[in-house]
Amino acid sequence: MIKLHDLYFKPFISEQEILDVVTRMANDIANDLGDEIPVFIGILNGSFMFVSDFVKKFPKPCEVTFIKLASYEGLKSTDDIQRLIGLTQDLTGRTVIILEDIIDSGKTLAEVHRIFKNENVKELKIATLFYKPEAYKKDFKLHYVGIEIPTKFIVGYGLDFDGLGRDLPEVYQLKTTQHMTNIVLFGPPGAGKGTQANFLKEKYNLIHISTGDVFRFNIKNETALGMLAQSYMDKGELVPDKVTIDMLAAEVEKNADANGFIFDGFPRTDAQAKALDDLLDEKDSEINAMIALEVNDKILVERLLERGKTSGRPDDADENIIRNRVKEYYKKTAILKDYYKAQDKYYGVDGVGSIEEITQRLSKVIDQL
Ligand code: IMP
Ligand code: MG
Image 1 (spheres, protein in one colour):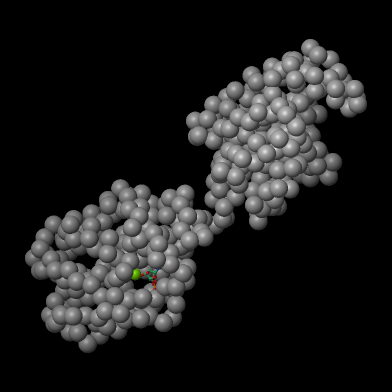
Image 2: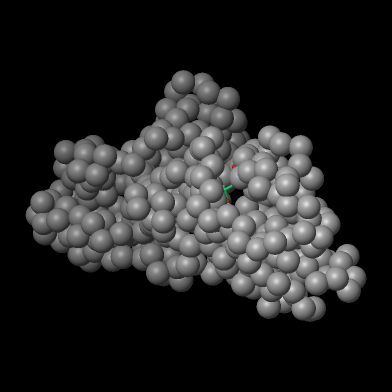
């Protein structure tokens, strides 16, 4: 992911893919032209990189020149096309091929046709590397199209967002969701996850999604997914990942404008971690960190026994049960630790100390994401 000015862009088309397309276009055009020496005309600024690669791949002699037009401001095409540098040579009787980086609404192309109306060229052909068919509003024929793309703003390989991004050798697409901070919060029972999640969600304005709460909410309110989950539980079966993920997806959807999410109690398996990645990917987002609160067993046992005195939870009252729960936690979460470590997203945080101290340690991790 990259940031230009205040917006985020994600990788879209690789350098290699672009070069393959450029090579294919150069060969197609060379084959169609026969022995004639064409004049390639690039439309500045955006086309400089395309033209440069294109003529290097063009297998025959050719001439190259440029005209300079400007129509875009920020993310939008404007009506007013400015002719900044026009034609500087006589093209009478020549075969001219326009090389455009991108054709969007087609306004720039209309201006190109206006420029050539009285030039008496033998032939005028249009070649564009990128083309947004859903945005195109004109009838001019496009003789060669490299890659059709959806109507989304892109940068790189000559294309800019307010001046930045032209130098990138690959192409990036504007993210539909801007920056979110998504955290998977981990910790053995008694580590203080719930307490810390409450502080963090206030401090960073995040939505806390506890799978336990989501389950209880859906079952209590008898939503379709809640009833489906209940039907498995009634049979004494585990609720399938798909159902859990669908519930989470609904929760994420409900809060589509959020600054980010704290996932608590999820994922628990490799498959769930992948499903969560896919879910966030659809939102043009990702998990930024798995933060695990680290507390040694002895302190966990003490804390939970202490809680057991007032919580009335029978599983908080027995030391052996507590030790087993902790052991179970480490056994199950080891795979997830590896999963996030492999992506460089695992952060262990010392979970022993005062609540404020621990919040501060967690904040230090989040602030640097
Ligand atoms: P049109 O006149 O609407 O067809 O737009 C063509 C010009 O707009 C291109 O030459 C680019 O300069 C600019 N443009 C269109 N779409 C994009 C984009 O997604 N990213 C960056 N510039 C774009
Ligand atoms: Mg252009």
